[in-house]
Length: 123
Ligand code: FES
Image (tube, rainbow, N blue to C red; front, side):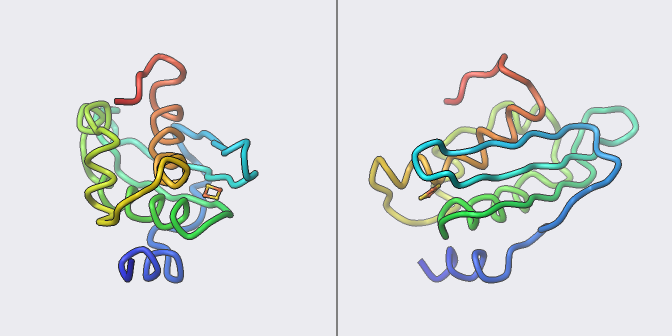
């Protein structure tokens, strides 16, 4: 939980990229919380050169977005395409109820929508 609170209070990679290659605003309709992901790719369009997020909402959704940006920055698109809910949840390091699970995966859904549109299956 300490890790979550630290990321919530001091989010990493918070902000916007003006000249992004991919962007999506994801939201949780149940609570109205939201996460926006801005992604800049390398010149070969194969990896994530830079990533930033903005958002508002509960500690878990926002901390998860912060943790996710740290996890994928500099990594290949393929890495993101293979990234599962489980991996992100392990990074969060806490037990989650089904409702909180929605909070935790909002960032991952948003990132995958930004990069792959509707053609991905969240696993
Ligand atoms: Fe809204 Fe967590 S309560 S995403």
